[in-house]
Length: 166
Image (cartoon, rainbow, N blue to C red; front, top):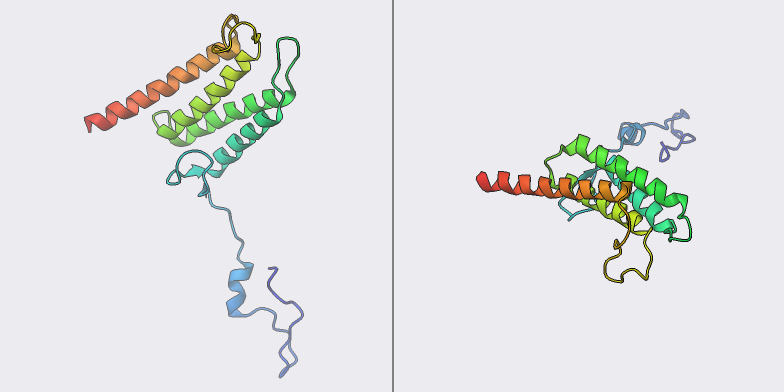
């Protein structure tokens, strides 16, 4: 409705004629489509629902804003929020695509990477330079990360075996 001039009038008749047949496109409400064609993850031909893009992009943003904890210092709340947003992204992806989809496997792997980095925050740099998880006791983050890595791997195996059979 921003393109309609409400003060225009017909000079010949003096009547206001601010709406014409050509203006109907300006007053029909524009509804955002369910699908967001600007993808956040994957190649350009992948199309994700807008809700998944919003959730995963928010998780990435919170993860990058947050300070990683160190063995002597607690991490920031943004990392906890990022974990919750990644969990929401995985749930949305599973509901939209199902558990046997490449996009679902990608989201699970990214979530597992995040969980693994949260687990590694409890380590000390002097323990190992190449294995950041060395000498860190098992915790919820590591077991959940392992579960999501294995789920993503099994999903990929199922996709490959299904495509190979057909």
